[in-house]
Amino acid sequence: MDYMVRSRGDDLEIDIPEPGSARAAIVDTIQQCCEGTCECPTDEVRKVSAIEVDPGAEALSMTLHPQPGQHLDVVEIDRAIHWVIESTEG
Image 1: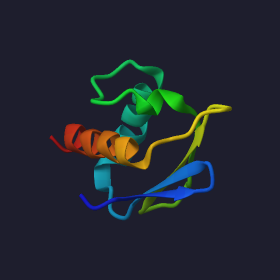
Image 2: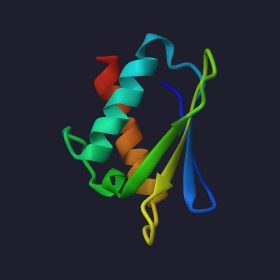
Image 3: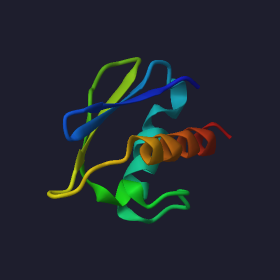
């Protein structure tokens, strides 16, 4: 599944053009990663204070907002998103 993670100021934007039936599972798993209740390979997502999900019908677009005083590492978040997609596809 293709996806893109990019920095937008302090936030990170994640775009998954064709999440298909895994859309809800991807969002749920990312939320679990932020709460530290999954097997995510990085703790970087625990720096996320809020997730905004664009309610678009097909593509999945999310914005991750860091906790005050934190900076989100694009490489580590990309690693987490890759893991989330693999775990929801299988």
